[in-house]
Image (cartoon, rainbow, N blue to C red; front, top):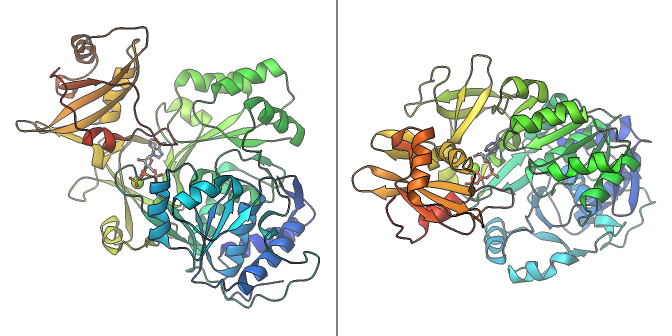
Length: 510
Ligand code: ATP
Ligand code: MG
């Protein structure tokens, strides 16, 4: 079955093309099912038709609160074929947070894993198609359909301007915002990322990251459009299970988080025959020692990246070799994006100077759902204001300095919280730290540090201040220090600075 498509630059076209190109190759191993590209294509044709029979059209939003697996993959393909919108919901959110997003987006249909039924109900959800964990019927399970019968024409014209994918930001700096992405934007994104990752149909991609998030979703799409085999492990797999699965399936590419080091120590112990050649590391740069272990011990390449929900995902990427030569950089801007680093007056800053990163290209968000003013503030003359501060070196490598909203202005100087955080955690008795700006009558803002001290250590405010004085300029040292048990972080490990800054505390002056 084909869409009647007047526009070739859509995700629908990419899914169609890979099915034709790689028909007999294995596409997906998930939920006790193994499917070839031809089978996945057929099933998603049937699913698209079943959804159409339920009234799904180009204005429809289909939300998922699903464990990673077959149903999620099938819904992403079926929505692309229908020109409808897929909204992926984060099942790690609390009911109140989820409820906000559900009422803001108002999807017409929900697909929910039975594991999340209580969460869904507590968030105010009522009707949904429920999917059992590990059900090889995937998203077709709720429908009475024959997967062997030929599906009819869908009769929809999918255009590159159709909204296809919607995802809410993490809500680090305020309420989460719904970023809308078009079929055409993702068409370019996926091709560009695939090229940068060098994925081909010979690869096997292990996808252990949540697919409700852009990092997991982006990796999945790269694998599926390249014609690679994508393997989705069961949610409760241990590191060891994942490594054994990796060996069995011949995994060549997989994403990991920075703290995945136990994983690699296990590798040595288990003596497995892995074909791993590339690690995808979303988020912050690795420490130099970790990079050296990867380069020398594992003989794999890696890609570090920086990105955001508004850009559809990755804006920069860099290889292990580049990373070793440019420690702490997050790479160069992708070839499909124009970029500028500007000061508060919109003037481009010189090399080495900090400014806000702006990017431009067809892949940036179509705008925030229901927020025309925030959209107009964020996208100006086609330039997406990332809200992130960067400087660039002479070779074009970018270094992140922090978020514009979190910059602390004190006595006419700028303090980047991340810089002070890293000085604090380099103290042997400090296990975690997070610096925020608090209002100050004299200095406009003052630096406040929330510090978690190691359980068996004791540390005074004076010692912390002395440590900072030794390592950074005096104006950057904390004026207030609060000892706390734990830094609040989101599921990606991002410190919730806003939560800490808003806490009602009256710490002693440092
Ligand atoms: P909100 O926009 O709702 O406040 P958020 O910005 O945390 O939330 P996301 O889009 O999930 O929501 O996160 C993108 C942000 O994460 C980036 O704008 C940047 O501040 C941060 N980030 C992404 N990659 C990196 C990286 N490699 N190093 C440091 N920070 C990063
Ligand atoms: Mg953001």
